[in-house]
View 1: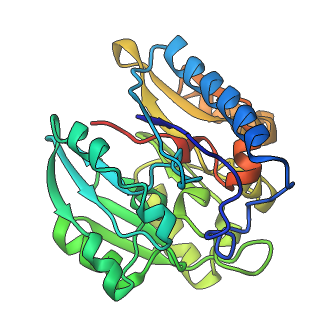
View 2: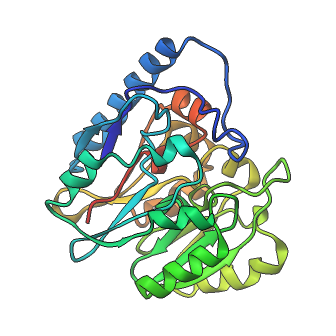
Length: 288
């Protein structure tokens, strides 16, 4: 599912925690026009390559609503609603969208009340899920609370791997999906942004089941970790990322991905990346 933005600009409520956001102070209507062009181009790339896409509309007052970080869906027809850090991100949880999704998904856990205790987990931004082996990887930040992740693991039956990161500014990386992604047979991770005491254990656990492609700190900044494996017509596996991320990969990395994916799908979304501080994976809500 993709959510078409009704408004888009650098969200002032999230600037403190998202070091990848920039504000070039263009008029909001200009930013939105550019973002909609990128959004529609991104959608077209997915659909042209056989990916089934559902699109719904965002609402005003929610500049980050095109990044659906407030819910996840799961095999068997279940969904989970999540606690968000910022007020205008909490407002993204539109009852109309929830009602629409409830036609196909039963709410397994509604965690919105956790916000009262500042137990924050922002869905698949905070949790990088290994759905094949029931492991959730979580990089701690103000948007990902350790106790909340452990409680989530108890509720869902996932084993959780919690770790800490340091970005190029020295701050924690706000979402795990900027550090890594996990596919069926391959995973990519920026080991160098993970604190040293966690590195060996994480790399050993990931490499036990998959080939690991390591990303540099510069590639992490350019959203190479913010990618997602998708399935097209006939079960064809493809990898989705932005033009920014694709152009930052070296030939060896592209060749390694080519062993597992028939195509790497990518599109230009530089306005969305600059003002929103998120990339391709952030735009996509998986519907199982």
